[in-house]
Amino acid sequence: MLGGLIDDFKVRLDLTLKAMIAGVVFAAAGVAAFACGLVILFLWTLETYGMMYAWGAIASAFGVIALLALIPLLSSGRKRRILSRAVEQRAAKAEAERNRNPEWWQDPAILLTGLQVVRTIGFRRLLPILAVGAVVAGVAISRLPGEDAESGVQPAE
Image (cartoon, rainbow, N blue to C red; front, side, top):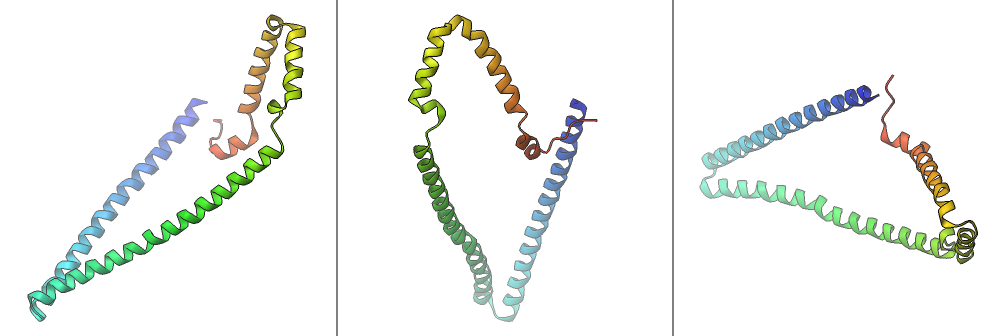
């Protein structure tokens, strides 16, 4: 059983490491290409128009890059506000639903019934039953069908 999990972990780790190395190489090559492009732009402008225009061209290139980076930054703030409003609305709706239909353990009639059962049977006799019930509930919760589909872990063969 553990062999399948370890093999799956090895494959995922290998793919992650390869992707990280490829990303670092891509980023380094991109930075080098950008730096070379700026040097070429500077030298061409320096020979053609002079020193002041060359520095102006480089400053303009960095200004355009800064403005292009500002666009996602501003849009992400707006998206964050929209998402926070949606989360607040869902939370308010869930809170209203909870207040309208209280949970079973919050119902005073059920609590009093449980207290009366404990008084009638006795706490020492009820303790083993509660322990077995807790184990059964734990096993039942661990075998819920939705959790296996999300984890993506398949049993070893």
